[in-house]
Image (cartoon, rainbow, N blue to C red; front, side):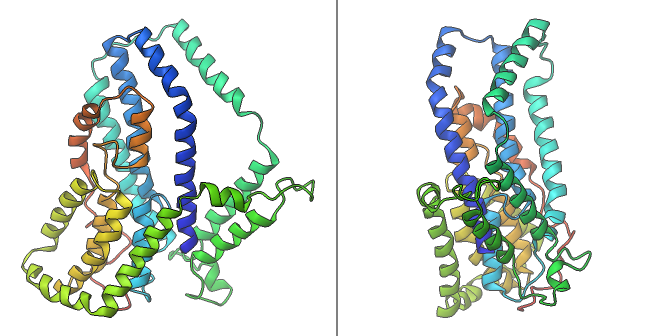
Length: 371
């Protein structure tokens, strides 16, 4: 499971690289913008396209365990606090969250369409179509043909996804059960295996003397090690609270909340987390709040999955400020968008969060197996 963090961190690294590449073009874009001011209708269409990318990047991370940082923190915390729990796997997470993720994307699309596009009479003539096609073709040509190095990465990544999905899919026996070692192998086993192959396989299989697909120098230079330390610190914090007795003390203090219905607690958590995640990194917020919510659930007799999932999912609904998530920052810095443009568009959209109380794959009447 730990290497799933690395997969996500490489995604963050790729975001950073994309940001650096786009920054090269930023000044040129702004210069051209100053030379020729777009008409209001065109500017609104441009704004809605940028916001669409931003919202889709944030919401889409809910679909898989490796989609965004809070998901990984949740899985790690669950393994640390409830070691015997097997309810949450790569497949069950997808089955639980993918429908809600798709619904949220559709709601965001409809909201942006109603806010910016409805009633706009933007005519796209043949000349405009030719310009658009020329720009897309130029960008596509700069990519070049796929290299053996890229083919190897694609194949290995596809193998990794299949191993993660079919390790313990719940609706059928997984490959870990077929080899006779159920519950002995976690998500970390296939992930680490694929990682080692990246370091050992040559980038060109036809030339065994070619350099490996991935070099340690690249990992050392581009991997955001601070996030790994943050993850580790969060797990250490949870373990320390459990061993020191702080969790028991917190349980006693929070037991008075048992008078509140679970639905009310879910609403309070959704509202609070959605506000805090605008000014605090969503990964940091999940690392801080998940151990507390776990203990709160135990103290009032509620399945910890209910409150922990509520917090995890709410951490991804951060649309209002550029500092909230990397997608927000990238879109903001590489456009002429104003902060108030993001706030104005995102404030109502934040209200459209899906209530994680809906019971699909996880039974909230049954506690994790460690309890």
